[in-house]
Image (cartoon, rainbow, N blue to C red; front, side, top):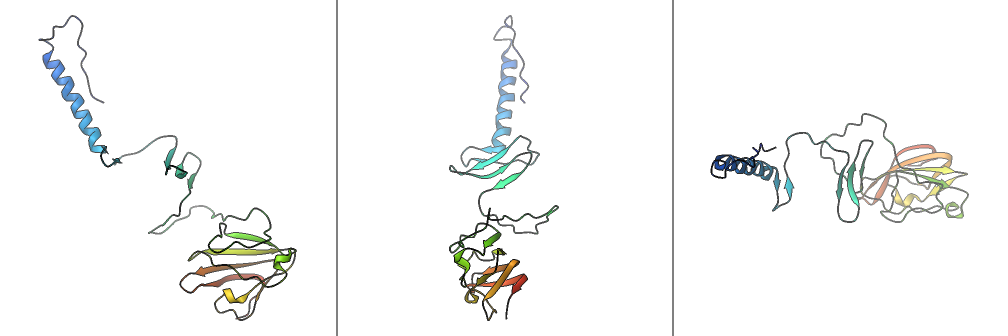
Length: 192
């Protein structure tokens, strides 16, 4: 903060000239310091110290793409980590809110876990999975009976996969091969 000396009402202008010049010099130095941090032309802010505040929000004009407050951080765009990710607490996966009666279309798997309602007619015959995003991992859980997945979507699987009641199947999609790979299966029939 610039240190400004107050001129009294009884001071003459000529005798206050040095005080005025020192005040302007202090303001100029303060503006130069701010200009070193914030470039108004490119709209960039460069800081090396601590930032404190209540909420940090980045908005693209439509949604909050990144928001951090005292209880959580929410990111509404894909995130790329180029270094190790260290998780200091439990990893929580998103679960489709209730039992699904139809599977998502290509590249529309928005959750990591889907509970499939085996009593629905959709799952009465083998279901062909639509493509996922490259590297995406998905877990299917069968509820109320057996769900059968067409083996054509899988690499190395020779027969249709059956997920029995309360069974789970975790798969990963490899885009360059256009196939799913089985990562784990519990209470399932997977033939390779």
